[in-house]
Image (tube, rainbow, N blue to C red):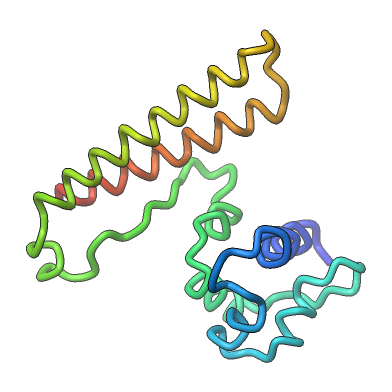
Length: 155
């Protein structure tokens, strides 16, 4: 299996079997994707006998999981970032624009504060290891998403 397919399957495995987000059990995700549970399990096996995800399965998985890391996987190294859509129609946007902009600004402040906390934690021992850098980078990505979402609220 190509390296990228293996890494993507490992990411999905991590999310579904280690992190186990509430409401995202393998059985539930498979049902919502329109596949058998055994099919999804065959895609995320850890014994080297994985079956590749199809493009349709990946699209459905992303829609069902609603986890930005799945999209980030495909955008790695591109300079592009993912931001969640805030409103899907003009009418929805008009309903509560002021509150949405305020919430978006609050979110950017919270995410930026998380960057500072990650930096301070990383520098506490006067060392900056690989894990520290990854932690800081993750917080920066979260802040970038919040900023893009806020910008989208203004348009």
